[in-house]
Length: 469
Image 1 (cartoon, rainbow, N blue to C red):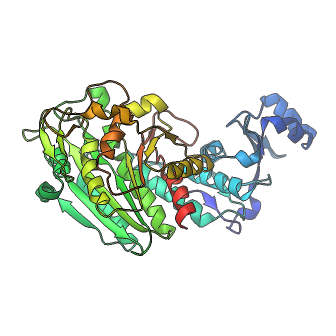
Image 2 (image 1 turned 180 degrees about the horizontal axis):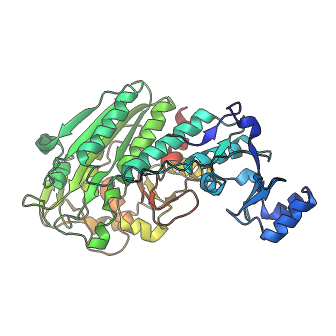
Image 3 (image 1 turned 180 degrees about the vertical axis):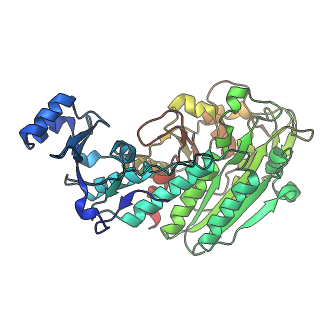
């Protein structure tokens, strides 16, 4: 994929147009540095340096060879985030190259380059148009930018977005596991896949959820890195489509359920970054991939499933399937007592009610790790919000016929209760992180079209890089 970000020295870089970043608080000062014609043009166009406001400045021949981007109330250029510039590839004249005239710190210049690369993303696999793709504006990145790292970050997030955006007719459990296997092999890992009825013995909960689909459930497991390094295990919920099972969702609730494998997509993107960055970890990745379908052999409300951990689970609701596929994978990971275990999942609507679509909820057993993750998220503009593992709600998943239920009778604290359910399967790993994410943009914003989003990937990678570089 072309991320529209070039290095200094690229052909055409020397003739790149000039782009000025303008804070509202610095607008008057910036105008003082311009000639009279430019000041008159700014006055005529009403440019106020509001956030995302773009002003094209014509040259003597009428061609725009300079531009200004408003940054609104941003306190300083040091606070620049990728989202401030992600819309520029589409908002500047097609086919042009641009260089930023402001002096930027390395961090700000990297954020700008990543934002430009992020805004280059398109998902047009299913478009039938024969028209050539639009030629969009390119950035000549500052010399201080680590171009290879920017491409790796943009590539990983594009991978996650592609996986989530692909419709469930194509992104089946078989296809998802094939993608996981491809990524593993590209980086020298040897994956194994447990398929269909083979899951009955060791992974009965994964099998129960996926058995009604015409595409058999499966579990991919791969390991990468030096076995003497700290063990980091990543687990991603891979429900490729969720009908709700026999507790069927209404049509409106089913419309976006192709994205219910967003946790797996983000896990694979994160794993790719860890391997590309050569972090000093022994990485393990587990992707349980299923479709929660409806057929005569679908699991039922009231069924009792004996999980890999030996914990019996009464099915209170077949639409609480994500925690079932995760609990078997978590139990497997927990057996080897990893130094850090992270699961990512589109687990609950309650987390979205509490925090909206942009901010994943994060739970964990070691505060030091959660604090490091929250700091990393703020640093790379990939925010998360901690929620409590409040033990007072443990009895909400009690069952009269089994050890626990997979659903609470209460309408309250759904995200917390989902996390508490998963925590029952973490007994050996002392450092466990659970991320409840959305993996979707529900509205168009500059650089962020409606569609898939790679939530928490950059934050988790930044935290892991800080700890294990």
